[in-house]
Image 1 (tube, rainbow, N blue to C red):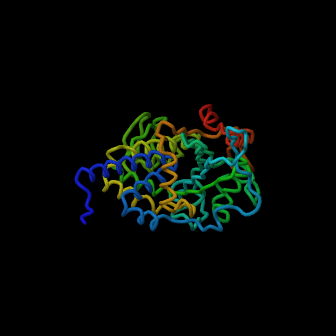
Image 2 (spheres, rainbow, N blue to C red; image 1 turned 120 degrees about the vertical axis):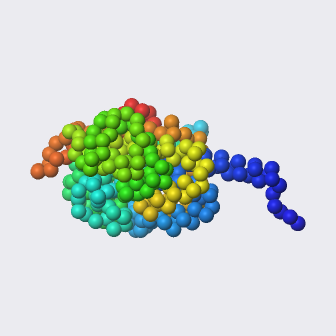
Image 3 (cartoon, rainbow, N blue to C red; image 1 turned 180 degrees about the horizontal axis):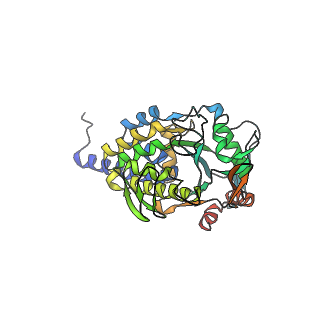
Length: 352
């Protein structure tokens, strides 16, 4: 018996596949390409194994801390009963030995990495209808779990990501469910696969390696994009503008990845996956394309406009000994954690 689908049935299946790719990719934008591109790869079939073979996987015994951790937030159902919330909290780390913190510490589980160059807390609410991305200034001076006080980015270089996870959990009081890290060189490969990225620069500046950026929207090549996210010496406020540039770049990447032109072009998707995933490290669960796809389906209603980016408030620039630091606002850490526990973090993000 011939089981080959009729032409019109094949057309319907292809259309359905396209819709699933778009839904999963849009919903996984929260993972800042980590999930989105992987989900596209999964549904293109042959790239699913490419993603799983190329992505770096964190050792399970070094991902999350042992011992006491914060309790998971709860939600109240219609009957007034409490149950564990399905919200997800993802620690997203960017690291760059080539032009970021300038620190010498080696992080062997992440290619080309030193201390954390950008720290983002990605929050996916219980209802899976929005995403909040909270940047934390890397020079924020805080107690490092199991160590003395230091800049929060130092937590990446102690004993694997478990120290970074423990440090942030201690400050916010909410458990982290997943960890994803990427070195900045990976974004260069991603932008090459996209044939450029459009960013909305907060201000005009010239980078140390000679690229000039105008305030407002502009198209960047891969080398320009890497210079854009690395630059900090050009700004009088140092990392404050740099963090804003990171957020502008991420928004540009998300908008670019999610275009129909990219999602409907298998060759371009292949280039994005193969150019990016070798520079990415995730926890063991996020390394499974099936888990990523399931998460994508749960988040199928999320669109780019449902994603909010902001920077956790702080108390400005100060000093600790001879070091220039960002002074932590511990009330802000507390308020962010309380909003997550109460299920109101979307409103908190909108206010900041």
